[in-house]
Length: 366
Image 1 (cartoon, one colour):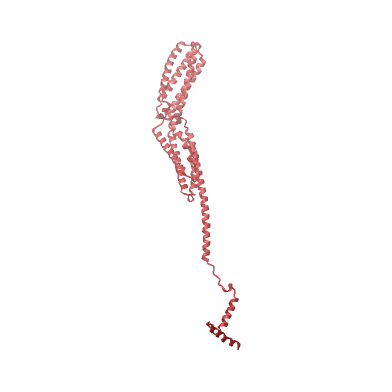
Image 2 (image 1 turned 30 degrees about the vertical axis):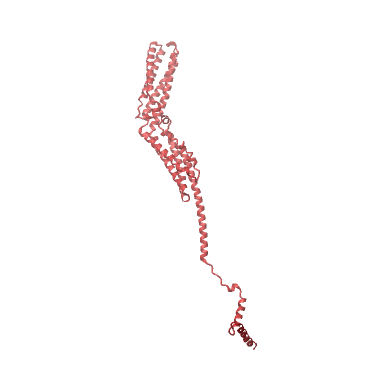
């Protein structure tokens, strides 16, 4: 009964205050619900959010990309360093090649003394050494090219310039060989003419010594015949060598006119023969023959001096020995050399690595 009585009282109170009156029995339900809610925990009441797999995949993908980029940049840096080192090594090998190639200048120089000092066998050694250095330079250059993907534009330009340098120097070797092959005869002939002048000087010395022996005596009987005979033999040997020198020069360059040199050699042989006759007359004490031979000797000696004055001067001998074809090949060599020097110009502004040993220290720049 008390329960029933209280319900109307609540309703009346609510009516007096203007509050809505819950239906009968609802109050107990609301109270029961509130009591239950206050007893529950947050974990039991809040639903769990599912993990977003797309976000996780995205994070992993970004991480993979970052790691990949880092690895690529590291590999690129390593390749760039290796490429620049190869550029430097290639340049150093070219420096070594230039130290050999500069010797070719002597073989292509058409001056007489250069020709006379040139030995084709030495040229072969030069070609071989220079080619070995150029091959080594090309190997390093190929290494640099394999790293071009990691290099910048300046590095690639340096590689191209170095390739041009190697190619230009190979052309120097090729044209140099042609010059040496073409001038082979001129080298031999110039060497023979050098020997000719040496033998001519020795001949004159022997003749002068023989004359001194005669002039030192007061008469034929007092002439030191033994010493005179020794000087005469020396003169004869040197005269014979003169003839051999001219013959060798003719054989080396058949197209050259060595007639003036031959005339000197012939007159020298004739003069040596007169000295031999004079020696016999002195040994026999034949004063008349001595005087007669001496007069002929003096006349022939003057003719020899005149003939010697007609031979080409040393400065003009190259024109006697060198053909137009030789001159053309020598010009080709000079053009190849100029191109080799010009190929260094683009490298002078390269700052990727120090190449001054080549750009400033090349032997071809001397």
